[in-house]
Length: 102
Image 1: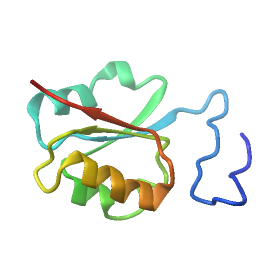
Image 2 (image 1 turned 180 degrees about the horizontal axis):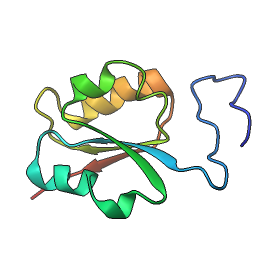
Image 3 (image 1 turned 180 degrees about the vertical axis):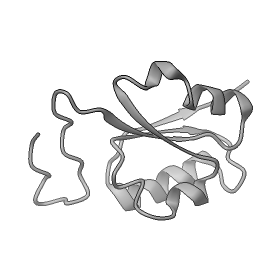
């Protein structure tokens, strides 16, 4: 595992071999996305934490402890861009995947 960037302490250390990647999945209470977040295929290489809204995800320290955020574009309490902006204020340039449903 590498040391965090001393200039930007919000940067995540690179995940070392054998460690599971911490994924924060914000599903917005969408049934399909909730099913994806609890998929057994994610259990091996990833440690998935699931939240139902942006406010739930922004509470506590789950965002700074995550390596990547996967989020629904439309959340019950705010739009995905606003959530991305707030998440990056907490965790620097954290990778963020926004899922859009037709």
